[in-house]
Structures are given as structure tokens and as C-alpha cells.
Image (cartoon, rainbow, N blue to C red; front, side):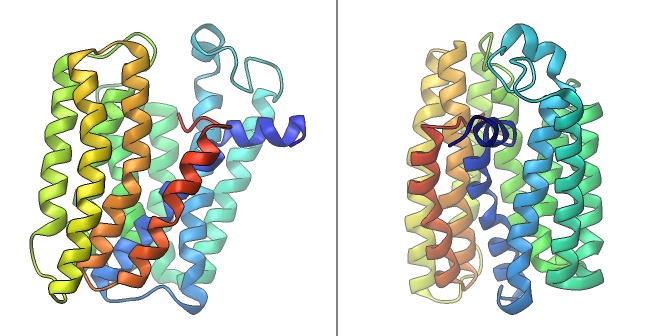
Length: 288
């Protein structure tokens, strides 16, 4: 991997994008609109918009990162601030273009607010008390992208589950450098328990779909819950960062559980294949 490519991969947290593919899968399953044909472009739109947010995040945080994380691409001088901003703009345009290809105006009706929410979070909301809510909104809209504007109401339940999980992970991530409060970690752990319950309860296509959902939820609870419990017991920076990473990867089995319960076992299996790959690549490029 060349130095420039590696710097770009670090700027956009490239491996972490594997954890957003399942958002649209879960939304599509809940809406009864499988991702096939041109609609397969929607998960790619999610990836592009996620990467745009990561690049924009580093552009907005460049002064703070110069002190707290000087190894990141901008403060280390491997990518200029203007270059990072250009990457964010290009990826936003790419994401909107892919959404148009995958679902036309129906998809753009969600993708445009999603792009706006991403930019609002990184440039305005992140340092404020509303930051975790802003990020949760982004992930909820990402789920709804899989359903589309017209069928969006049918995907509100999985969108709320993913948003709740994101809220806890984002709040805990604020302690990655200086440590977190035990109450924050416990709050995230409570959210994980609620998301686990929500993933397996409610209407299911069949008992087999419910069993598949239960398997995904069990992996999610074990992966994320254990790390958050560690952070509650020892809320220092490294432990909070480890719990944040577990929360990011934990999106995958949660998305799979939500998709499986609503009838898309094939989609759930496709989502799950991203987890080992994401973990392997995260050893080379940090997801946080």
C-alpha cells in the first residue's frame, strides 16, 4: 500500500465502511424492498457518505488532532486540510449520485437529508451536547435509505434500534483520549441491552427467521456488551477506545439480526461476512 493510498484509507477510516453496508440491508428488509438490481447501489451510497463524513471529521478536528492525535493524516502532513475537504466534497457527491442510480428521487429524498446531517454533525454538532444525537440521526437516515422515502415509515423500527446503539457508542467515544465517565459506559451498556431485546422481539417472518435474528443478537450482545462493561469498570482512554471499536464492529451482527427477523436471511448472511474482514483490516487502519 503506497503512502498516499494508506493516508487516504486512514482519513476515511476505510475498513469501518464495512459496518455501514448493513444499514440499508436492514432498512430494505423492513420495508419489504430487497436490494437487487440497481438498488444494490444504495449500500455503496452509504459507504461513500460515511467516508465523506470521516474525511470531513478530520478536516473539522484538525486543530484538536494536532495536539491529541498528531499521527492522523492532516496533522502529520500526509494530507493537506484543503485536500481532506476536497475528498469530503467528492465523496458526498459520489454518495448522492449512487443514491440517484439506486433509487432515483425516492432514494434522494433520504440521501440528501442524510448528507446534510453528516455535514451538520461534523461542522456544527460534534463538539456540542447534541453531538451523539446528531450522529444517531445520521445512522437512522442511513437505515431509511434502504427503504426509500415512500416506504420509510415501515423501516422506522430498525432505524430507531441502530440510532439508539449509535447514540451510546458516540457518547462513549468522547472518552477515547482522556477517559470516559462510568455512567456513560453504563448508559451505552443499557442501550446495548435494549437494542438486543428490540432485535429479537416483534413480528418475524417465521421461527427460522427469529432464530437467525436471535443468533445475530447474541453475537452483538456478547461483542459489544463485554467491552462496554469493561469501560464501566475501568473508564480510561484505551478501554473507552476499545469499547468504541467494539461498538462500531457490533453494528454488523445487529444489522444482521434486524434483517433476518424481517425476512432477509440472505441479506443477513451477506452482512455478517463483513465482520471478520472489518476486524482484519482494522488491524492495519483504525476504525476510530
